[in-house]
Image 1: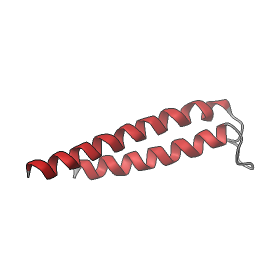
Image 2: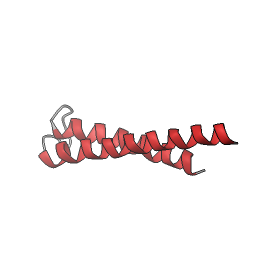
Image 3: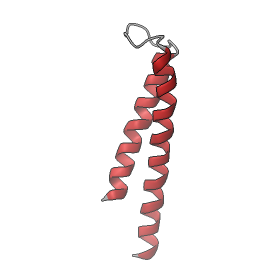
Image 4: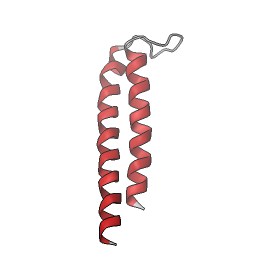
Length: 68
């Protein structure tokens, strides 16, 4: 259960991080977040946390399959 939650949270954070980064650097237009440096900084941080959560979830799933 924890591994699947970790994968879900990781996926959401990774997706949000990419979207926030793109908005922060001004790729999509029409949003109040577009071109704001805060999102260009927070986006990659969120994406890295999401990626770490995905890796940890994957490790937990592999460990579970090996031992039980």
